[in-house]
Length: 392
Image (cartoon, rainbow, N blue to C red; front, side, top):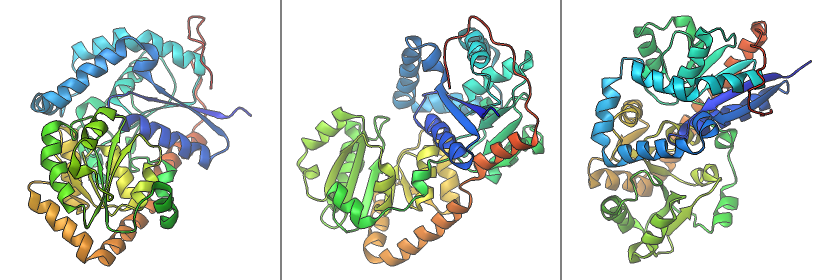
């Protein structure tokens, strides 16, 4: 019997959407040997020359004009994408996405970004008979995600589900599953082994994440990171710059960051291990990063959330008591004193959060697998000779 084929479509506007797709793909394969998966960032796959230009313009808007981005986000908060945007997506992606689906013949399509979800929804209205699941990868329900052709929404919280219902989505089309994180973030590693592997000390540790999306700008370095570094004698600092080598070199020039307790960490695939030995995370409140931190049970401090989905994420985590926005240096002092004076209580709190996340760990993949098991396989459209040659 042929294995069930699950096609996961994402976009590279920030890494979180694609990380969620890969995390879900791993989870699906681990939970069923009868499943094969394929993850595709649709824009980069179909338009490898054009898409980097689009991404660059988006990133420039987010980092240099966050208020404008926030205004546009709120303007479309309760609306689907307007006709001009829909037409642009149609012309750029429609026929080629149709060819991809014809070639791969998936049993179900899962989207972790609204753009491919919109495209596949249009295909379904034109006759495509493949179930479409959409995973909302933030703690808000923006109107751009919503389309009546989506068969099932997998959302992060009950609050997001209620927002979907208020916007007319039928209750049976929305399941609260949490945001999928890679199984590595639910695995606990040996602390002694990680400390030895990365050359770290066994002491209160704070991880700072932000990459190239604003936290390592000059003014931010002098403000946030400079202040945090004043604690370096008593608290170990893991400053993760990702692929931003320019920021890493710049920080290395500053004497305040050249200290045995300050570690500048470039790109690594072992953030899950570093989170295991970190006691506090300072980060931009992206949906995926926050979900991974939750899986590890780490309390969070948020720096300058971008107006829009980051603000909504921040509000959710503050309301739940899992994080706090850095409104002044006093917030940093408060949490750092907790690290130094109430360490056992903080460890217990981490264990409580982690146990809750472990309970929710498999909901996303389980919902998809159950849907496949309960529903008969719907026929796919016939393969086109114009389809690109891609395989599972």
